[in-house]
Amino acid sequence: MSGAGESIFWLPAATAQGRGVDVLFLALLALSGIIFLVVLVLLVTFATRYRHGSNAPRGELPSLARREFEIGWTAATFFLFVFLFWWAGSSELAGYSPPQEAMEIHVTAKQWMFKTQHPSGPREIDALHVPVDTPVRLVMTSEDVIHSFWVPAFRLKRDIIPGRLTQIWFQADRTGSFHLFCAELCGTDHSEMTGTVTVMSQGDYAEWIRAQPQGDDLGEEGRKLFVSLGCAGCHAGSAAVKAPGLDGIWGREVPLANGSRVMVDERYVRDSILQPRREVAAGFEPIMPSFAGVVSEDELTRLVSYIRLAGTSNDIGGTASQ
Image (spheres, rainbow, N blue to C red):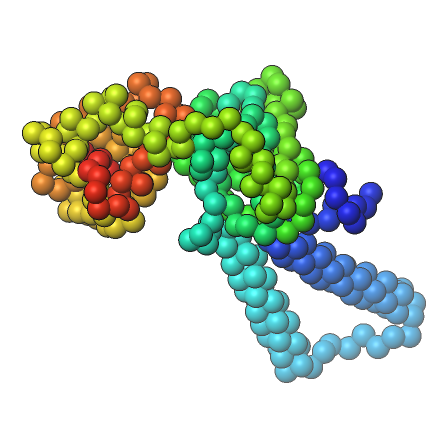
């Protein structure tokens, strides 16, 4: 990693979330140290004072004092545990709720590389460029086995699981280059699955984006794939086959044939493409074929991006289920 303020003893955090993790870690370390010292002092004190042959009084403690002490100690440790659990839990759960305006970047892991794609289309391998002071949401999946996206300087780690979408977000507030690792044993060349996250100033990032080879963005690539796979033949507004459209459906709850309801999001759309009979929309026949083995993870990413775009507009039809 490069950047100011480096130390051989402590890796400085490059995100606000990372500093929160450091504070929590140091608080737990200090608390553990205090408890250790208290126990050590009491152990040495009692071992010395009440050693064999000493004149220390050895009568029983008053029952009332003993009971009050036990109740007080138990209550204090219980409330301390609840506070620490709330602190750590709320800090961890915050990583699952990115801001609405967060930049979305798709990450596909495979043996043994990370492939990333920016909203406007540029792709990278084992590298990721992001602007400073900008929330970034990573939507991740794996093509083969379990991997893990780990940036130590960000205090950021999330498993990438095949067949599922996982997400995490961060907001870097320091520029520089930071190491990226796979933190899950994933095969022979696991140790070689590394990369770099480069945090740039807003202006430098804009220039970097402009310098990349220009192509279709994810939504446009997904639209072309949507048409080429024949999806528009059933899910377009003018299609003869009765199938759900996408107008305004993204982010809404829709009823299913089994009487339950489900939120239309990345997970639901992905499952609807790969396992169309799993969650059938109410009022529709389960006639959609499965595309498992037909589309790759990269193509799924493009399709989901297009369907989300279509589902948040009012001029495109599409599919969110079958």
